[in-house]
Structures are given as C-alpha cells and as structure tokens.
Length: 207
Image (cartoon, rainbow, N blue to C red; front, side):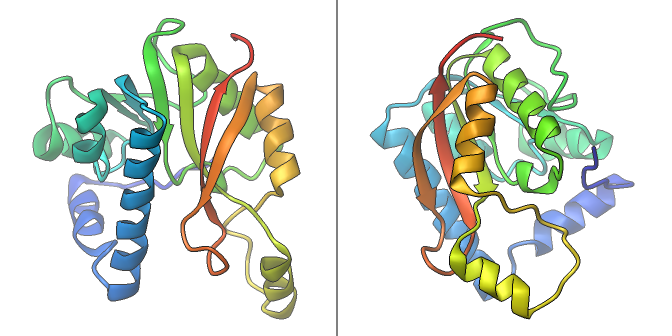
C-alpha cells in the first residue's frame, strides 16, 4: 500500500500553501468544503470524529463545528505539522488507516478524504473500510473517485498513467457491504465534470 510521503516538515508547509492556490483548485476545494458541511448538517453527524489521514489539517476547522476532532496520519512530518500549526489538543498521532490504534467503537464517526482513490487494490480498500467500521460507532464519511461513461471515454482517448483508481458505483457498494457498511448517500463534487464523490455510510455489522 502506498501513500504520499513528505520527507520533512518544510514539504508539508509548502504543500499546504500551494495545493489549493490556483483558481481552479480553490474552486474544487471550496466545493468540497461546502458539500462536507452540508452533509454534516443534513444528516446531523456529530460527536467524536477521527480524521484520517489528516494531512495538513484542511478540514480541522470545519469538523470542529460538529464535535471533537482526533487526527491520524501515516506521515511523521504531517503529524508534526498538524500538532504545531493546526491543533495540539487532542494531538494527532502516527497511524496507518488499515491498522488504527483505537478501541472498537471509539469514535462517533470516521472522516476519510482523498485517500481511497490512491489505494489500487480492492482488498486493501476493504481492509481500510473494515477498520473504519471497527473504530466508529455510527457513521463513516469517505471520498472515492467513481467512474462514469464520460470518464471511461476520456480515459480511452487520453492515455495516462493510472495514478488514480476509479471504481464503479456497484463496486463501491459491494466493497462497502463486504466491510460491513451501507452506502447511504453519494454527492458529486462537480457533477458531470469530476469523478470525485463524497459518500456517507452507516454500519451494517461490527468488525
């Protein structure tokens, strides 16, 4: 399993400053923030929230409106940055998404943004979702890249290395069910233009 690896804290700071600096990326980021906020409001998601991977803490302020936010990330320097620049109480910890050092049902919900499209193996995605199910008592919010006929045509015409894994909606539902989760709602970041989807799951069974 591979993740984006920052090699020092300066790289995290540089990424945080520049990742959403351009007009188009600010537009996408603002749209993502809006949809996440609407999702939490509409379905009254609140309580203790695990943000994993927390990255540079982009969603910390928003999530804090709905409860106490705990953060976890595989990258050592992301955790240092988070604790120094974003929030130190409770402090972020180093942890892998598929092996979280928390008790069963430790959180009300898990928030996972822009990770699973980088996991290219179905069994590995299921393992992560099972772990989210295990540590959450109520819900999971996670984002995926869900393919459509438009993206299939685009990929057929424009050949690019597969850095992002797109899955079908039926595949997403099957993987979620295998992990003991049920897809409750799915929201497109940019309908018709972008494959990114924000999904809300509820528990089918504990793991």
